[in-house]
Image 1 (spheres, rainbow, N blue to C red):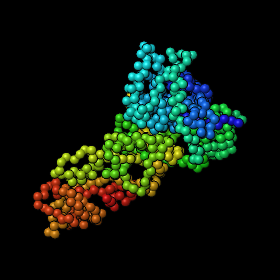
Image 2: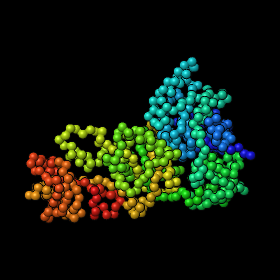
Image 3: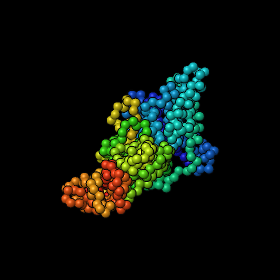
Image 4: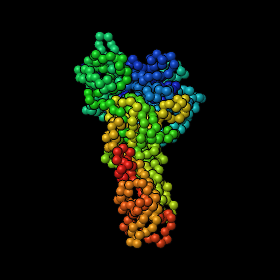
Length: 573
């Protein structure tokens, strides 16, 4: 009887030349065909160019003895560290359960280390830091002190992330640069990985979803899809779909690290053999339960700005967007909850960390209520918060006239944000796929973080269909101002000029509410004469005594819905 194996996928990430591949070699006892830089160009250039896979096994630890497994296997996913290969890294982090961030202790945090930390925050809540190359700390008798200093310094950086208090393990994968020298700290690193494995069985009730990283033919057998089971399970003779090709195939056989198995479940790294498939049509992508992974031209995603990104993230700009295992250009339209519906400034940081966990692949983003109204945003905001809209700020200023200065803490909105994404080409991905937006066209040798935002899909949409867009209640606040010209004898009706143009249809504005500079509320009753003036009724009356020009200002605020075909004919507040 074959052993029952619990497989855990561990992403190995870090800056180029931090020693990731050497560390993987020191940990591994079993290698796949794509391991330890076997790619010809990897050997030629001396860097990792693609995802590498290898593994080591351990007896089931005591805290997991109650689970129905005989052996604990760690599959190591060696991710490239070079800046130009960040897209490959993004693909790699979607298949991992936990992560090792490799840092060259002689250099500390470097540019790609920060980018790897960002994608790690999105991918998982379980991370250990390997402080590599401790053998290069001199003098030897001061080495322990140097390690403590590095841990203290790096701990201050990690305190600003969701990995505050992360375990940091000193190691040397290849002491003195010689493979024959025994590595240092490997047992401690393995123990740290074991401690992070949750003592719960895999959930396999979801539909089957498989991330394909290679596809190749075997003469007389068929084509082999190698990859990782993201969710659910698959057995020999069951049918899977290749959604990018819109084709289904029967599973002929399954292997895990060259050993045949009858079934693969969530977390397993396997090769699946299918027949009658041209391997040249598929390099990377997905396989799934038939009918569960759609193709779409646009989507709404819950998003957060990455705080290490220094630039603006404006609406109507295009970004490289990685959705699932595809990267395409997409035009962004950002929106959020309305002014006054957000959090306090003090709660914003805690909410951002909580959202990181919710957005991660193991979490669930906030539900998107398509029935409510959302405010259009000129850009995606981070911890600085969104300024109140000009219209809202104007009303606030009017209402606060003559009082003490308004507290700046209340002039910013903190709350959930979303993006409407219009893809340059259709993509095939799960409906709740991970989203990472970036500017890959900037200098790869620069020191700036290129990752701009992250999130999760909440609703696919077809942006070419106006009726679908019209269901998104995204509005811009439009403000008009006029002036009270005179008060009618009844003391409650004012004649207002310059609020609308002479040629405008006054009927469109009838019934809308306005506010005076003193904060008095009125309702437009209709036109007055033919010069564009309006009659406005103030139920509480108006006192003309002591009024100045500011008091006589009339403000009309309306919502202009971006996708409402009647937006110019019907004004809403």
